[in-house]
Amino acid sequence: MEEANQSVVHEFIFQGLCNSKELQIFLFLSFSILYLMTVVGNLFVVLLIITDPHLHSPMYFLLANLSFVDFCLSSVTTPKLTTDLLKDKKTISFGGCMSQILCVHFFGGGEMVLLVTMAYDRYVAICKPLHYSSIMDRQKCIWLVLISWIIGFVHAMSQLFMILELPFCGPRVVDSFFCDIPLVLKLACMDTNTLGMLINADSGILATTCFIVLLISYTYILVTVRLRSEGGASKALSTCTSHITVVVLFFGPCIFIYLWPVSITWVDKFLAVFYTVITPLLNPAIYTLRNNHIKKAVKKLVN
Image 1: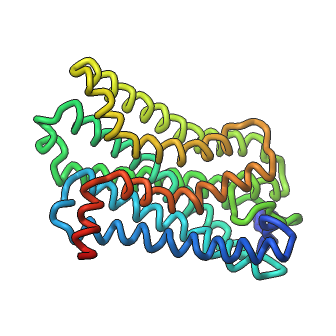
Image 2: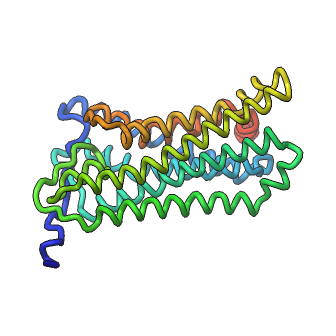
Image 3: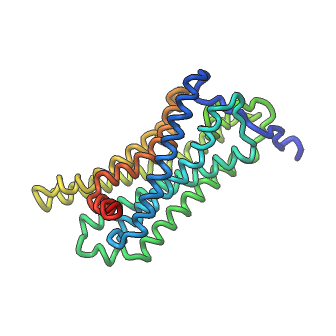
């Protein structure tokens, strides 16, 4: 009985993004450049915030953590995706597949909670400016970041435990470029409909709850400032636009993949590429281009 429950599949095969050799070479060059830009951009933001004393505030502390998480999230899938584009047989070991699942949900779940923390920071800064320094002190910021990491870890472990002991004894082709739970579930040698609903509910509840909290938070910020001042709404919108843009870019694909009842392969692949490759690149660009303090720090560093 114990042997029957053990997996006999030692590796999985990725279907990849396409079959055309010419397109694969083009994507290899594109993703290599995008990943290099992601690494340089996010680590540059982290180092800039650490080294510039003018950026030692709660908002930038949270931004540095977001950039680090984006760097980690992209590094889980993009290097493997890029190198596989040059291979005829795209394989990953069973342990490597489980590690990808763990890390994607760890960093993804942590980023969701971190974005909620950043919304709370903006709420305090805009709605309670006189109490900002006392509410968002250094100790609270560290605890808020730790909580986001802990929630991400608990979420990832809950996902992994549900899939780790499944029997994989036959099909081993994953129709994607990385191990995502809905696709790996299809390869199990048992009925996984109930388990699939539990796993999707786990991810869906976390993503939807964080997204709703973020919508309410930013709506409340804009309404509150609007009531205080006629020109306040536009000022608050300008302050929060970067945060709102990042929230939509990150949560949109996640919610669609895990909550949309109909699975369309090419759409799922596009969205997976978007939130694992494109979004981690866009985040530092969005914050850097719209933030005067960071632009001044960059100019100071260059000069």
